[in-house]
Image (cartoon, rainbow, N blue to C red):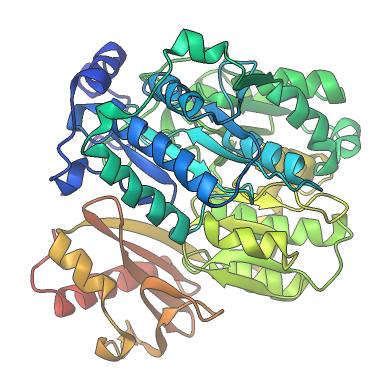
Length: 548
């Protein structure tokens, strides 16, 4: 399908009706017999829309009850930290969860403020669990960067990060059993629940902001002369930047101080959907255009952004949006000389991230630790101290504290932005470092493409083995490797084809009717397009139907 409105402002027909979304959350009841309406945990929890009966009261009742049961089975006896983002469905889902969890006699810790970034919950869990036997876990009510009509419900285990597959599979299975008769689940009415002995409030923001000096060098930011702006994009980080300025005496100019649950100020993403992705050139085109129109670059060197739950970062200069891959590679260079972590730690990257990150990791650190997509794969390496920085191509990263201790086991968009600010303040602006790395490693061209595909096609890709793939060349470059595993030997649910200077990955989406192509070339932009076409041909050869 050809999209002609990508990068253009949303029209009235594109905007949600928040009141309608909330009404349908309560009115529509999912049919457990339909796969599209059952509970399904992807890489970041259960997601859906109340309009399609995929994110409704019944789902949240069932998931919350399942979590209460399974955390008890797992011996999780500490409190459950819960927070929510600014999506229209987050408030009602948060209320439902509290009604169910208090009835199940789960101790809950809620935010003293309306919204909580995802990394703040991760930090709270890790901090609480340090040295304790009664471990805590958490829930974040967020669909992350997904469109305004979406709701999301994510469970964080006692590790502080996304729960592993085995645990989320058990939660989803039990939730779907409960879904068949969900109205029988015990609940305490919200106003009574919120004032019960099971609910306590915590100043999440105060805790998190106070700890930021453990991971970011604010002395460097204060002494530098970088001119910085930040756009919270109507997300959960909206109240954090003034607190950071006040606590550390820095000057970060907040450019947006309003909440808009329709996100009408965003331009349409590549598929003409409103997607609050701060790293997307199309989604951020409107933000960039406004900065240009206001002549903001006369007073700003760098503008940072976060998505609705502040787990993703975005970086903009006068030249445009910085590719997250390139920032990750530049961060590897900077951190190697500005942190005393030792040379034994690796850099965590996903199999679909730029090889530029791997090249930088080999040059400046002890190499890369490569995992499948999904931040949950970084949890154990972070806890065990095998990696110092973990990042993925979709603008998510976390890093160790300055003393080498654990910061978070989930993505932290606020810290990512602050790291970019620290770099700029020390004369290592991310875009400048990237240009230096291009001189050292050669320029690269990277792209991700989504291709519509039905279930049959996606299943065929998922079950594909390297032995079945016939692809001797990527353009004129002989293929040197065809694999379904990361460099650490972990299957990633797709196929990777590599030549000397080019590679591509095809993998099916677990939540959308698409498959994804990731490709990179160190040869030329033309070779990148050749790689993408080779990827499409590969899929056409091994699947029974032609993809759109």
